[in-house]
Length: 257
Image (cartoon, one colour):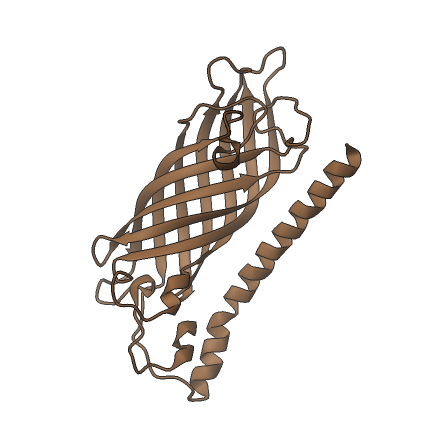
């Protein structure tokens, strides 16, 4: 068991390092762009709004059994399907296909009826990257209204556990990393609707539900389903980098705006 746990922890650490490297690499794009622009290798572009703040709500859960585990998370004691969740993300877009983000999530996780009792006032702090991959292509429609993306993130979570059977209340901080998919839907020049699915991993030592667990699938995981609104920060006279479209005659490296 020790060897298995050590292996999982190493994989988790490697994944966290990989995400951190991606964030650093993405942050270098503006410097690359400035160097290329100074060398006269690309056309002038308009000043864009690059900052967005997103407010979201939904549910985070961990369910075992019934074949649902791969998609709905996995805890030692199944959570309810709906656990009220609220989140806020701040995103900066150094390019039209990439966003750097910092996020906070708060959720109240509780056991499902018939499963071991627990309650977790759960908080998540994370840094991540959103990849708007379809923006690499000059497709005016539907990418002027729909902007799908994939996301990666890593950070720390705080569990405040109570209502544990035969055990006192406890709190703990633990690392996590996660993947997800989502999409933005343009409402107007300032507001987008959003929807997303997140999958978050912890190492085998972490007990998000406070329950002891052993076996092949001992790594605990949370799945999140959220909807929300993303609000552009800045003047409405400037276009959002999220919805900027390269002209047909633009230089190819304009993707590094």
